[in-house]
Amino acid sequence: MLNTQWGLMVWTLITFTIAVYILVRFAFGPIQRLLDERRQTVQDSMDVAEETRAEAHRLLDEYKTTLAKVRTEAEEILERSRTTGEHAKAEIMAEAKAQSERVLTQAHEQIERDMRAAVRELKGQIAELTALATEKVAAGSLKAADQQRLIDEALAELNVDQLGMEN
Amino acid sequence: MKKGLKWVWLVVVVVALAGLFLLPGGAKKTLNVAGEFELTPIVKLPAVGPVDLSINKAVIYLWLATAVIVILAIVIARNLKPQPGRFQTAVEGLYALARDGIARSVMKSGVDTWFPYIGAVFFFVLINNLIGLVPLPFGEHHQLSFYTATANLYVTITLALFTFVFTHYAGINKYGVRKYVNSWMPTGAPPVLRQFIFVIHAVSEIFRLVSLSVRLFANMVAGHAILAVFFAMALIFQSYLIAAALQGASVLIYLFEIFVAVIQAFIFAILSAVYIGGALDSGH
Amino acid sequence: MNPHAYAELGAGLAMGLGAIGPGIGLGILIGKALESIARQPEVAGDIRTNMFIGIGVTEAVALYAFVVALILVFVAK
Image 1 (cartoon, rainbow over the protein chains, first blue to last red):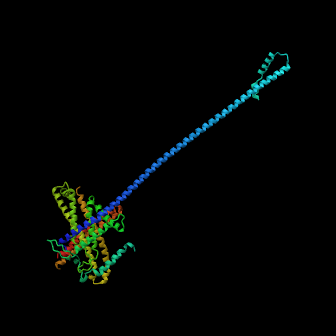
Image 2 (tube, chains in turn yellow, green, cyan):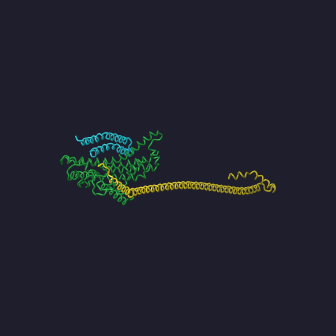
Image 3 (cartoon, rainbow over the protein chains, first blue to last red):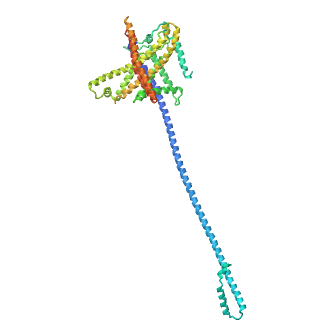
């Protein structure tokens, strides 16, 4: 049982060499390649996922920036329109005020004018009436020149303005 | 009863039946444990000097193991798919065990270079050990019996020689002869001490070779001898009753031998990896 | 007793005595390994690998005894 068996050693060498060759050629190599390929595939898909994620992040950031910009712009526009509106309002109000003042002024002027005319007419009538009355009272005692002077004095005493206002 | 344990009962029944009716002694009806390990040429071939290439039981078992490896390897290579099925997952698991569990776990460098050898030695020893637990008709009188090529010292010593040669080849290849041999001795010690340690280291290297081969050989011989003794209980006690009662024990031994077969292949491969890895890391 | 009987007696003694040391050693070894695994389950894989290496080395001692027994029985007749 324990004496040297060279033949068996040679057989072991042969069979083991065959086994190593076959295992490396048909089992280890292909399996290792397969595992490497699978790891590569997983790595690749992970890389792609990472890329997609980064892209999504980038897009999100971009959208966020755009959205922020748009919002600022909208606010700006709103602000601008509000200012414009206020301007317009102020303008319109100012114009309306001016116009109303103008109308008022015109009305005042018209009233003044009318009043003057009325006063002038009144003066004329008073003078005539006075003259008439005086003529009736002092017919012939007065000369034409004295008559005129008396009329003027009486008119000066009469406060026409006050009369107009009281009307 | 869990579904996964069904095969255990199958093994139990097969082994018990084989033990009762087939194995002990055959026609001779006597117990000869040592005879189980004797090698008689089946096909006689002319010897070349001391090398007698006659085909005997051990050679047949070696060829059987190699045939199983070749068939398995080619079947596996043909059926590799990127999406693994159940069988391929098991194969990949075994491959990962050999690569990461054995080579990568004990070698710091050179895994890619030396894994093919370590993986191959693992599977070669494993298949040889496991074939030893299949009853095959190579008994003394062509009855079914257990034998394995690794229960022969010269088979295991050849395998250990591979590891021995590769260990020193790896060291010399990496560091050159001078530096590699110098790494066996402590630097800065007096010359006498250096030489003494060199001798001790050389002896330990030889003992690694011996222990590697004897461990596997003795485990296999002891296991098969115990199995043969237990299966031969009927002959020892001359009573089928006692024999039948002891079949339970022999089944337990058989299951333990399956464990030993796997563990010994694992230890052979991992020690090979440790030795080769040690030589690769010896230069610093 | 004939000389062969001494050889067989020696073989039995060699195996039995030679199994004591490795038996104790394996018990300590595996016990310590299990302790370490219980303490640090996260490195269980490494510990188990090294435990098997240790088992292989320790067990070899018993197997030398076994081989010596074999030599005594079958060779030193």
